[in-house]
Length: 230
Length: 257
Image 1 (cartoon, chains in turn yellow, green):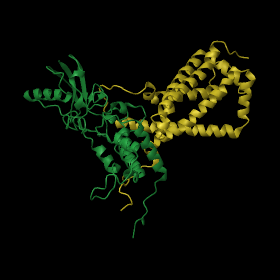
Image 2 (cartoon, each protein chain N blue to C red):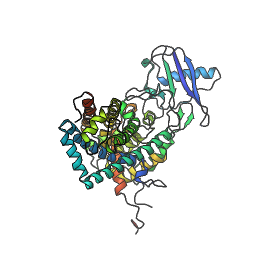
Image 3 (cartoon, rainbow over the protein chains, first blue to last red):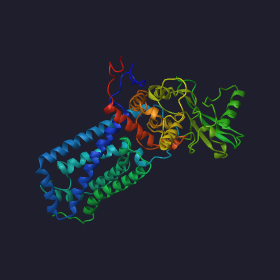
Image 4 (cartoon, helix red, strand yellow):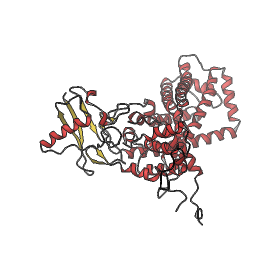
């Protein structure tokens, strides 16, 4: 007989096999990715400064391979685990209700919270394009790609309006994703409080909108002719 | 008033089932929703047809037996209300009402609107209890309990296990139900002893039963006839995550001798 009467079910599930464990993984990796998004935006906003600034920033990052590759590997792992967990949870969700409702109403949930499984893949598609567009430069319809001239790559890249439009749409999706994800991660990790959680939700909305607005300001500024190539 | 009902009819667990239309004349606004169904069933019986099966027992919102989707809303979507407490004054002449059973793999349909919620029983059996020796009742005030904890435990204990949270959740998750039980017991000294084990056992059983994950969207909270808050789910997550990294395997010699 065990020391306590609550015994674990036969065939115990490991942490990462349970829904709570998978959501915790999504929350932690989501937090890492959020941290990157904030840093990335702050770095990118240097586009509004003279061209040397952002080019120098880019060169500095590239001169620090330990930081650059440390960050890249961490982010790649975070993205991988975030997607892997969400994919497995999606499979569980699909199986959990084999027969759908003829009528189903939503009473309490936000559009953003119900569409995380849509905004996520759109952001992934954007991420792949974004890397090809500005990191590898293999897809850069606006003109020649020069890895030492980040400023010009950005400006000529965004002068192609369909590309800018795709970026703007993707950032609206990111806004939705963060709108829910930024507070939801706290709930998934076990933090909920009658006073602080509503503030966390307001903070999440504000930060989601600020991040999207900050990112969108760059293609808009290029299209409006506010930022010109040099 | 006169109503048109579209009701899910399914002979048994093996039958595929489908929606069937019924016209219900002479509905009185003072009837409860279940009384309206009783009237419809009596007319079906008179015509020699099979009456609509639905679960019910106390009809005063405390037993947790009744429950169905009314126009896509669990228990009809009225705040803090079970189906049996919904009255026909909420509807008007000519309304079209869709009635469906709770939908979840873990809640197989028994017949029509009645589902098998034994998966909830198995989650409770896995850890929704405290281990105490039976015998004479202990003195009521022997164990001091902070008022706030007593209140939080009582709020969670209000869960009647009806399954509306699962039905309303787009993922058919049982997180609110499990969270209510974990909060109810975990806030009290008697339940704290097995708090870690309980979280591990109940979460695992919940997954074994085929309930999917919580996405923190809050549909369950709106559907809950007992106003259980989303906060209880965070408590499950907290207890489970802590337990997953601290719980040790049973010692083979502990307690011997």
